[in-house]
Image 1: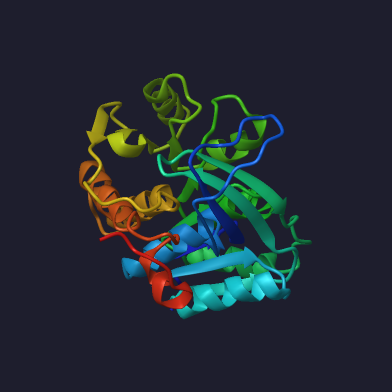
Image 2: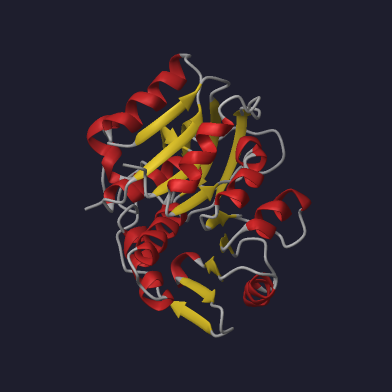
Length: 289
């Protein structure tokens, strides 16, 4: 049976470092409050949350057969994620974070796009899916024409888009559903309205502890509050929100109900130091109580 969601994009092996404050841009020494290694990547986060929601998902990702790549593969497979792995450079990050949610992600390595040898099979999988998700990376960007030709609705997450970066524009132009956060947008609602006017069915901007705001096809502004939760780590919350909205929409929910489902899904990942609680028995570590 075809997967309900075809998802392509970044997965990574991350070193997480918790600091009292992000470093100033001058030579100095700081002591970390904690550090650990875990699975990262926006597509990994979405796949884990969709798996937890019992939505059938096929993750397509580039991960090497080196030690870190094998860790990523093993962890996601142990968590129940169905994946097609393409051998290549394993993505690695060093994430500097604070307890307040500030973060700097240093990309230590990242894969390039593939030659396209498997495109016929990928096109068939996209066509058979209820929705296609292409996350920001070289290979998903290359796959945009295949997604457009598939006839399946395309969902994209442009994260901290500033409203101008040319790299994001092909994703925005092809998408039926657009997600972003408000970190670099001066006027989020205006951006959402412009995105819908340009052809998207609806657009959503997450606002951290303030929940999220959306604009639907009728142009009406919709808001949903964040679900209260004990926060251990905010990594993966945006991906979980995206997954909750996607799952609800595929289940027939209207946009307000889907936003509420997204808020619940986001809250479910805040109490773990990993992308999702599904990784706790696989990778271990403390949870919020």
